Length: 449
Picture 1: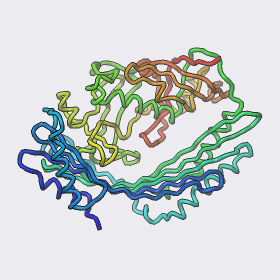
Picture 2: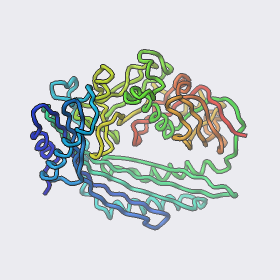
Picture 3: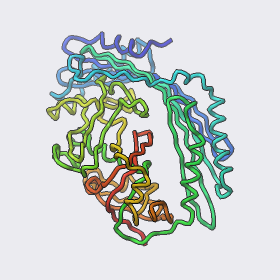
């Protein structure tokens, strides 16, 4: 039996030499992924991942090393390697590790584990995906191809350092998705559905099936629209992607590198008063919920934009020191193989009050409802703010969804989009990146024929 992550982390940091700071980050996780194509199991992958990453700071230099094994002798070798690696690093006066004494926020108590998670067997999960694929295929004869997927993870992680900080957390998460390809009258369209939960038993495959069918079938007959300027109502799946783009511009690391369009605008209005943009890892419904960040600092709800005004940037300990401020609890890591960066775990636009989708549709009359976008990574420049992506969706007519369109582009800038947001919907959809709501932008350029 390998040691508990927190015990191994403590054993490593207890070996810190005088005059140095040591941090150990330990992860143990178990993943399951199932993919089904039509009626056939395409893949079933079960994996266990475990490892430790160690940082050493001495004489204003940082060394890092890692290993994919949880054993004391291997961990102590990683510590020795990290010490050796400090000799090859440049000096940086901002390098330091947090301590309990530095904590300005108490670590929240979050229940992120489904007690019955282990009682749902692989056979049950496999049956769920196969049944979902069959149900979706049987929904309508125009659905020719379906894909369905299931994924879950059980994660235990710990971080400790020689400044006296020591934390451990555990979480479970599961998700199910479906993708439909429909064909009719020489046209092919696609649509998807998605759900997530702590416990596999709480997933709603019927909702996912209905969503994938509806989003694909309603696009049949789509044509290329005429170019114009008009109101744009973003589907929650798309607004979540836009939220991810905005989050990247509000990173303290991006500011330090000169790669944020808002780097020198703290305290200024960068969006309309309808916009409050936040990161809330303390929301237990969120996929990325966590009581502490990748450095062991307590997480908290941060409103980086409040009623249009930029309040500050996401910071970890190092970026905060370089920026003469304090950490916001936004240290993140890809895994134990990397040192901390800056990121957000559960981002979103604050929902509007009493603004259901029907009300937003009425306010978007004559505009378009964007159901999906393509080319977000290549069509959005986070440094200049340029925004031009492929889009498909439906016209907004008579207070509802009208004719579908495709082969279009929508264009503006990130800065202009934020200023032109006139309303955010009150219906919240929890997605992998955080809570998502429909967003109404007063005017954008639609490029078509």
